[in-house]
Length: 223
Image 1 (cartoon, rainbow, N blue to C red):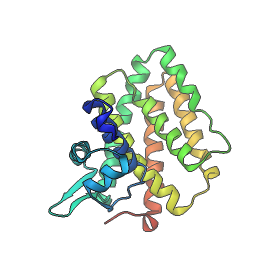
Image 2: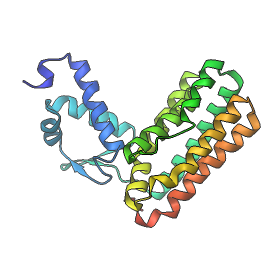
Image 3: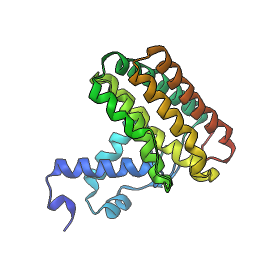
């Protein structure tokens, strides 16, 4: 019995959408991969209808593109798009951080302490989740629209992080400097140091951008 016969249709559609989106963002479905509704329906154990709805929603998010008479394709990532994503991320994260400094509750700021360190036996998947969750925590600014805009762009970075780290086979131990930068950002936010926090988040995003473009020749990015 398929999932569509045992669960409300709205829940099925949201579940299928969430699963396909996660597979795109974590490169289980890699950029440039051509996909068909029937194949995904069989893979996820559902009918074609929720798969079609999910793909159309992902098309609106610029993650999937329609190929006339050929199905769909996971949208490749262009150099221009990467540059625009970093630009948007800096604008949005800086705004979120400044709002956290100004209006974040003591409890909200204290919860950032969990991102000061990372387990020594971290896998690539654990690193990506840790990094994403840190930036999502910064996005939780109290302004719903600002938070949602920041979350959307931050989650799309999973694809870039996965391709960067897996293709260059960078040792995870070398990422400690990013954890240290996270801790410095947390320090500035908890001191309610607006100027320091803004400068540190800018430096952090630019550091990530520089590392990505330094490795651009070995990445699965379509120019």
